[in-house]
Image (tube, rainbow, N blue to C red; front, top):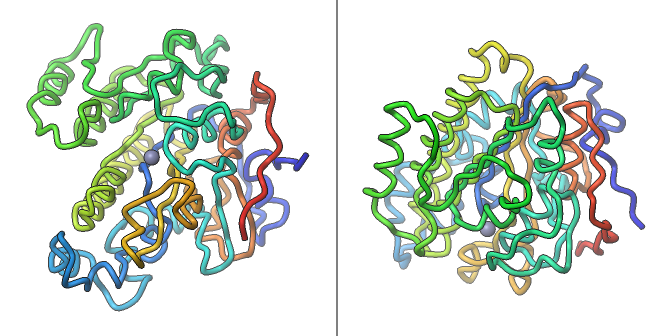
Length: 360
Ligand SMILES: [Zn+2]
């Protein structure tokens, strides 16, 4: 059985940097569904920005996101990633440098990906996006059983399958997904956000709201309730990519970058969070390449759709910036990292499977 190196301690041991890190008291994790590493590290794709036959506005993509070099383009697309995180955190997965992050699961779609992120292992029994309560325990459910985290763990997502992924009924986590209203003693702003989510266009399939609703509902909850573990699960990037709307896909990524910036500013300005909180940003799966329109798709039949990326910033993260050394990481390392960065040990309750052979 291949040994998983817990967390990103690998970098500390084998990387160039021996920066001091310390435990965190809080973890914030954000996912951008199906966001490609190609745009994270290279910005807007040249083929897709100059595709005059595209159904989307390639002119908009050009005028808003194009620049001559990848360095300029990625900074234009995701300024927070390429200023703050690049200088004070770490970014893994730029395959230009053979720095690779992959799904260990072989499905390359959402539920198996989220299962791998939050339980630490791929599971061949978790192989559909159906609303089946997850038999596996996530690191969030595990930590929520500890007195210091009890009722301080919250999950917010645009997609209405998160309640199943985190097994809401069993885990008892604070959970708000799909078009559900936040319940409890609400502030005026919270009541407004509940209302607004039903007044926005429903542009995806029935169970998925726009990320702007998820962000504000979750961010306000964070400000009011100060959870120790909070998850923002965004979905716009995947939905717009499936729709072949590259202009909207880039916009969605840029909005997410701005929201992450707002979350980070709040963390750093808030006693209890400041300098005690590590922020992780990643994705559930990759997508195909620009050629042949495969960027719209993912799943086992799409070549290289298991190629992903991970970014993080905070007291538990070495400030190595963009990792430029050859390495191979797996999505499942995130769960162990979350626990380790809090000074806890997480051993999933379910039997871990051997890591699957990764395609070169
Ligand atoms: Zn997905």
